[in-house]
Image 1: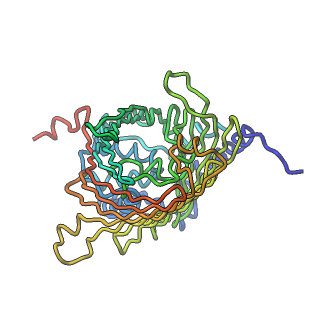
Image 2: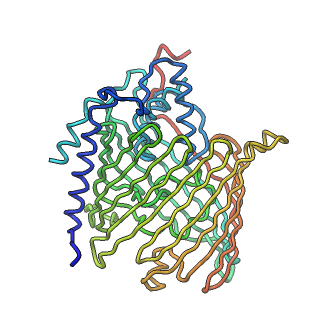
Image 3: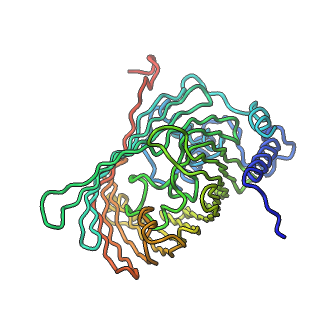
Amino acid sequence: MRPHFHPRTSLALLICLLAFASSLFAGGPSARKDSSAEPVIRVTDPDTMRIEGEKRFHANCGRCHAAPQKYPPRMMATVLRHMRVRATITDEDRRLILFYMTQ
Amino acid sequence: MALFVLLCGPVASAAQTPDTDKPVPILTGNAGTFSFVTGGQNLIDAQFNPVLLLPLGDRWLIESRVAFEGQFQRPPDGGPYAGPVTKHVDYAQLDYIANPYVTITAGRFLTPFGIFNERLYPCWIRALQPDPLILPINTAPSDGVMFRGSFPVNAQANMNYAVYFSATSIGIGSVDSERHVGGRMGFFLPGPRLEVGGSWQRTLQDDRKNAFGFHLGWQPAKAPLNLRAEFARSFEGSGYWVEGAYRLSQLHFLEREMRRTEFAARLQQFYTGTISPDVAAQLALPSANTREADFGVNYFLRDGLKGIFSYGRGFSSAGNYNQWSFGFAYRWLVPLGRVAEPSEVQ
């Protein structure tokens, strides 16, 4: 007999799994000792941020649409918050793309 | 317990917004007017889709899109074009960015089944204006709650996910949806710009059925090419589409014009499910097994404005057909507040 899971039970299990996975990452990249494989770039150097931001802009935004023009920082901040949700871009990508798009 | 961990655990790592970059409310959206000629029948489609983005503080966002669409046809016996003008709320949702890994959404939201419905649907984004045949499969709006996010899993890959539950109704007149639960998970490799993922949805009313989908996207860095594909399987029907869009920016003549020109092609196939042809028609699905090939060209006149033209040929046991489309799509963006500090204004 095949095991049968009620949908609500499945959803609860899935949320618990996500919560557990989220908590594993909760310490953030800076808390990890071995960061050799960590893609998060916590740089503050403007040139590096601009280059990295442009790279991530083309990689992420180009998945769906052509490159838009640049808008004032406050507008770009709203657009990037919207795109973070809509296109599920990472928090770090959002930060670097916002920097690049407001330079 | 799970929600507590989700909401409280990683909060400390979320970034704060500097004052100079405080997001401002925005009214954006798109509009388009298109002429579709399918099987010799002309349809003029005019649509206006405003999107409101209202950020609150550092972590909240209210976003909503309303669709106004008029579809006008000339009666078979002649006379002026006439037809219905419809309006509906595509989404009206409240987003809470709990931490860098989890965003909680409540309200009416676009169902994350595949990628076309959420990300490629707006007329200014899509490469070909006719909908993919499988688009209606499990993409009706959801009314409920959703958890979603994206985070790097290693130096080469980001993972994104969405888990949602939709109630039968949220009690607002003229707003109805079905009761279902589902999820989507994908991996994006920024290096090769490759994205793959899968979707699942289970209907929790009437016939409790599962539906599955897979999606793929690839934008090679060395060519202005955009390849996408989706597959969906459900009791309503199954099928796939594969689409490529290529900008002519690598050609070395008429460079300005070539940069603005994009060729697109889509191949797709649909197989009927276990529903009747009448129900399929209500869902805007083909009533018979169908194959279709579409070819088009887009010309980007300026940022957010493009002219489109496409031709498609469909092969179906219900009758083969040609499909032509021509029109314009436009996207706008207007701030609803001050966008610059007084000291920044010249």
